[in-house]
Amino acid sequence: TKNIENISFFLKEGSRMSSDLNIAADIQRSVLPNSIPVIEYLDTVAKTRSADELGGDSFDIVKHNDEYFMYIGDVTGHGAAAGLVMMVMNTLFDILLPSFENTLDLAIAINKELKPRVNASMFMTTAFFRWNPQTKKLFYTGAGHEHILVYRASEGITEAIVTGGVALAMAPDISNIAKEKELH
View 1: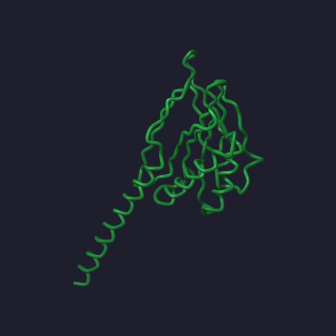
View 2: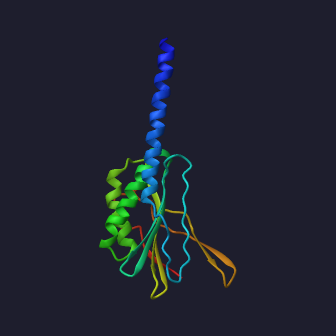
View 3: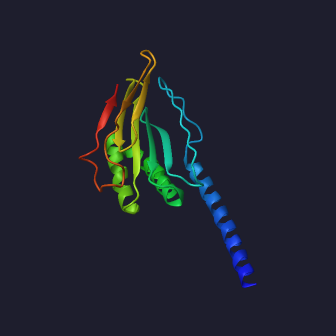
C-alpha cells in the first residue's frame, strides 16, 4: 500500500506541475505580440514555437517616435528558467524603450538591468533593430545573435551579416563592445 500511495502522490504532483507549466506557457505567450504591425516600406513576419512548454525565444515590435524598434532573441537553454528570462527581457524592452532613441543605448540599458537578475550561466543572444520609414534606413545593434539574413530581390542574392556584440547578461557593461550600425 505504501508503493500505491507513493505512485498516487507522484501522479497527482505530476498533474499539478503540468497544469502549472501550461499556465506559465499561456502567460509567456501573452507577452509576445498578437499581431505584427504593417510597417511602411518593410515586410515583417515573426512567429515562435517553443520546443518545451516554456522557451527562451522572443521578439517584439514597437512604434516609438515615428520609428519602429524590434528585437529577436534566444535565451540559453529551455524550460522554465529560459522562459522566465525571456519574459524579463520582453518586459525590459517595453519599459525602457521610451527612454532611448537608438538600439545601442537601449541594448546597453537592458543588459545593465538583466545581468544582475539572472544566474551566471544564463544569457540571451539578441539583435535589436530600428527602422525609420521616413528615411528608409534600418539600424541594428547585435548582442551575440545569429547572422542577419538580407535577401536582395532585385539582385537575387542573400547576404549573411554578422550581428557582432556579446550576448546580454554575459558582461555587466557592454558599452565598449556593442555598436549601432546601419544596414544598407
